[in-house]
Image (cartoon, rainbow, N blue to C red):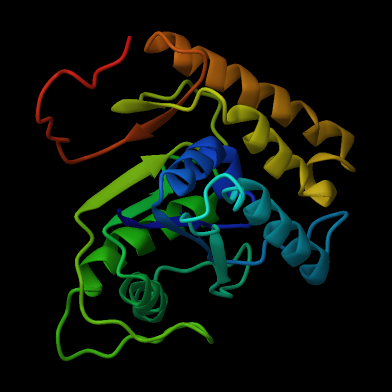
Length: 245
């Protein structure tokens, strides 16, 4: 089983981009940690305390049912605490993310797709890309959030990009994960952000877009629902038996 780190510029980005995959991976027994770079506030209806409660609820919704999956770990969440709307690509920010990579000993890291209209998204992805390298540096101490243990230098084998973009374009995934049976939990986790997708009337249609995207991407591989991912590095196959569609 893998240690997986899913980085979001703001609480809700991970759920929007790959919430169904998070739920599926956790049920499969992988150790999934969600890293929120900022608290996502201020917003018109939210505040830091409320947003944190919403984020925790969303993680709980995506966590495996202990009655059905007693050996699986719950989806965990940690806040890095960089300022929302003012995220900068700095050595300090890189090392903070590298510290989380080390503490979790992540072998797979997911981050938002690098082309985006939102400055925080573009900057966070650049930080994560560099933090992946920084995490392996010996002789350099990396800070870790309170409650997390320091970890040994490590280099995540895989860096994948999920789609939570603010551009009006169609995703160009390198691969699509079959998430049939998990989309309802994804939608529930998004609606857990009541101040973001329930109270603001203009944002309610985002849920419709997310559902439509899952159906469309699923149709590309011949299944009911899918989530797409991009990679700059080739994914190796041991055979073609596992291909779907």
